[in-house]
Image (cartoon, rainbow, N blue to C red; front, side, top):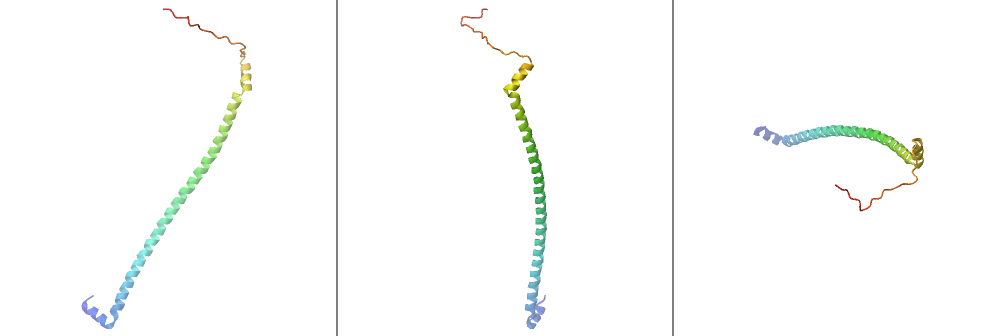
Length: 121
């Protein structure tokens, strides 16, 4: 804008309206930019939220499967412990010994070594 145009606008009182209009236009530009930034931020946050919810739901399914597997393994462990206790019981060992035709030992004879025994070369 030239000096003549500014003086003409000042004399007619339109310069202050013109300045106000340019300020309003700049404010509108800033608001439009701010609205775009807010919209983009909302979209990014939405994608992040969806990704995190997807990740949490997948971990929930994996956790459920692992809990099921854990309970199954605990049942197998309990069954195995019961079988071990049954096989270690005195009744089971006695029955197996008689089935294998083993003989009970009544008296045990131990060999005693005297101090005078020396190996000769």
